[in-house]
Image (cartoon, rainbow, N blue to C red; front, side):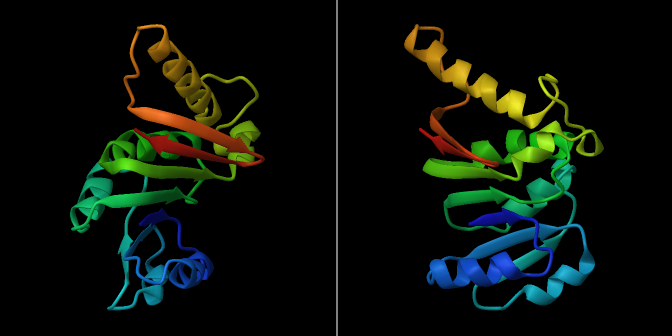
Length: 159
């Protein structure tokens, strides 16, 4: 699994417990987050989710198929979209991409605003259109099977 955003390492500890056999690759911009790595299962990379080169270097470290990607990083609209567009294609078929803290899509300090077409929530809404267009014969260009929205979070399932 891949996770964007380490912060104080709480989620890393949780994933280690919930997924006892998972290899966890995490990305954070703060060099202090490197302390949460462990040789056996957790690799921490220092870099920005807004940088496609950093994202590519991060993903190159992963030797197994990617089952799960969780974005709990900066919550900035452009960062969310850059990460999604770069990383979703790297998921294995049947994999899940999770975007947390969607409330920031409505907060100006994160680049959010209600019904602003440049927000992550609007990109996610467009994926719903994309899936439904597939059934009308236009085509599902993203390879998405389905999405689940819950308060403040979205799960995107790859075909």
